Image 1: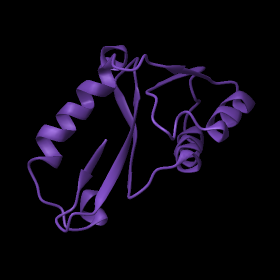
Image 2 (image 1 turned 45 degrees about the horizontal axis):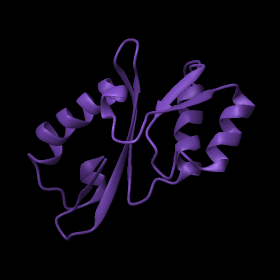
Image 3 (image 1 turned 90 degrees about the vertical axis):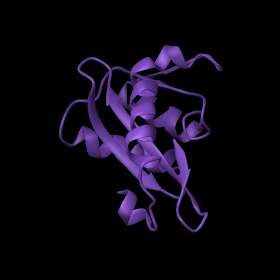
Length: 117
């Protein structure tokens, strides 16, 4: 997801959700979320619980990265990409994103990344 701060600077949110029990495992907020940052978030999750055998992602630049692909192969995780233009293939995350947009991002004005976090 992405949105803008009060001063017009953009920021992104990486939402990691367990499809099985719909538990939010992580929400990472920053101005940029490259593949190495995604890997760091997954490593943090891995430190407290086992990672799944498959992760469903969209086709964002951070997910199609060779770095993330290599990391997932080393860990034994399969990346399952949704088809472009088919958000229903990632319905739980899309539903969560919609709720975050309505109930948080559109409801409040944030001045800093710390306020968003």
